[in-house]
Image (cartoon, rainbow, N blue to C red):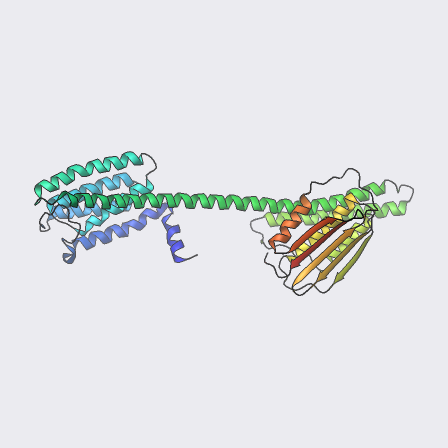
Length: 384
């Protein structure tokens, strides 16, 4: 965070009014110092008057209300205006006159309601002050009073600009927060889809197969054991996903440990899907999110093979290169669709999003022979 950003953050704090107390005291002290006397705003051309007790009152009325300008902007400006009028009509011309535009900027930037009416009241209140100064003074031309009014109007415009800027910043922050929440919900949905769909699909397929193995106790026991193991893995993956949702948990994605791809393939084989698995190269030590995305690609592709082409030959080829990871999963059309299972298309769409975020290439195409092939290239070392 830059120094300017820190200052803006402090100004937005509820106790930001305390920051204007030192400013008020600084202007007050400078106005009283002999070297700065009669060096402030001079409106109407009245001759300078020596300082007296009333001059101190005028300075205090202009400076001290600034400490409360954030909480009571209108009241603050009203008191400062009285002090400014006294300062000019008495001819003190103190440096405290600089508090008037500061207070006016506060009104324009902080007032929530009746801003237009307030501006009209301020303009109307300026007229008798200008008339009084013109009468008691040497008769300066009206252009001087018009110029001062335009300067005050500029201060009001600055306050309006600050208010609009603050509103736009609040809107931007709200939009960023909403986009972040939406992206996080989408990420969680993708993770849940990947974890739940794969494991539940495998369990359904294994349970369906067990129905026809009642006459073969050994094979039935193996099938039920596979269902149990798949359920345990689903619970483990879900527990990890829930850990990621915990604010106290790290936000870095989990990289599948070595051998998880082979475990995934073996689980699919036990569900009755013949899978040929080939893995080339050695996974890089720092591949960022590439390994996790490659794992999800294989997981989703094998899930789809179980659902839409159960029993058909499936090939999985993963190649770990120095700069990229390539994955190719192909399934022929010789199998049958698993009854009771249907897809929403969210899985492949989620994979495409994951790969696109990392700057890779993704394709999922139906082949001429009726099979289906997924090809992915993921740059290694991509940020999480």
